[in-house]
Length: 196
Image 1 (cartoon, helix red, strand yellow):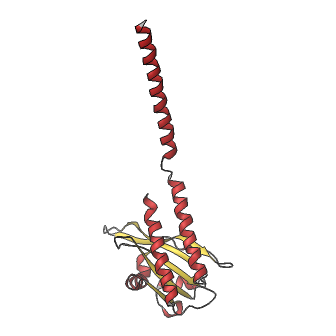
Image 2 (tube, rainbow, N blue to C red):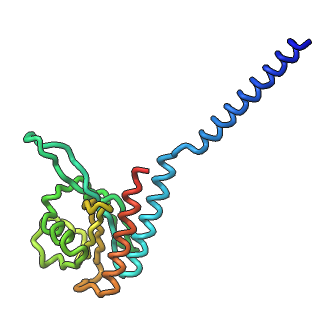
């Protein structure tokens, strides 16, 4: 009789153990990292920040350009490039998102140098001889304010571009500089969180 109870208790303990394992496995499966869902949350936050900048600075188009490696030259050196990764446009303003992908960094060397040094600045398109600016002029851009996007370890990872098409923007007020500075730091945080 004791052997029967031992077998029954062992069977019940085994079923309980197996049930616990299956329940844990099921619950862990629900907690798993969903990269698309997480990326969508990041994207929503970046787009909200860009819309905020567009509204507060009365801009026509606001976008993010992120640096990336575009392959290698035969010399073995990396091709450094940047691409538009996010964009918001005002009513009646066309998108340039797909037109400026894999742009060589050398096309923006003066802009990148100024942006890294000044953190944010505004420029008139007609006053600059940068090839990239001439391309933007073809899409109606009159003035652009730039802000640098950096990691917490001070690595430059991209540019915040605030574009004016319907009007010229000659200077940034102190309030506008503060908005750009605060938002570029917030956006940088979102972009760094891509890896999580």
